[in-house]
Length: 186
Image 1 (tube, rainbow, N blue to C red):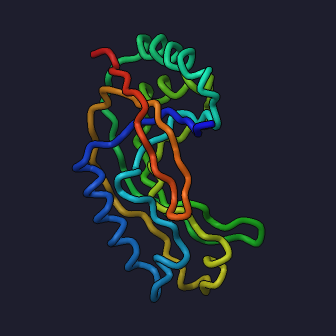
Image 2: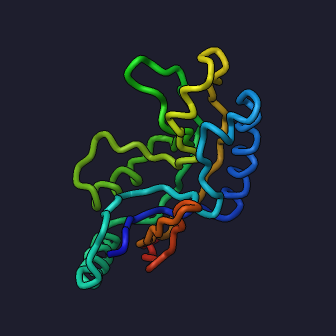
């Protein structure tokens, strides 16, 4: 069964700018820990997940597409702005940080769109994951070597569509494929 999610894909120019920021952030870590302790998201895979649906039977796909089409009619295209790349990296005894991520500005249209697919979710935080922490490798770093990262990234774009996507896992990492795009009304 395919692994399915609903996402906002980013324009190529924003993906390229984020790839540059990923390289910049890697240098903030000592030695090779930027590659050793973190699994970086490939720039082509950068997106904002609205809802992860998990494994979906092929037989359910036509109903899923119809449902998305109906929900999209209730939305409108909107401007989405980003503010900063964040890594709050001071681990506690029970928890270590999990992500380096790009935060979005607060957005009522984004929250509304998310609620169409997740239900009312007051805790929805729009973000783009740039890297995931490899916990057992991360623990090898000395705490004083772990950078606190807040990098400004004041960019934005018009969200004119959402995508139904499939995630295929492999030893090299996930690959994402657009199954269908849905235009948002103007």
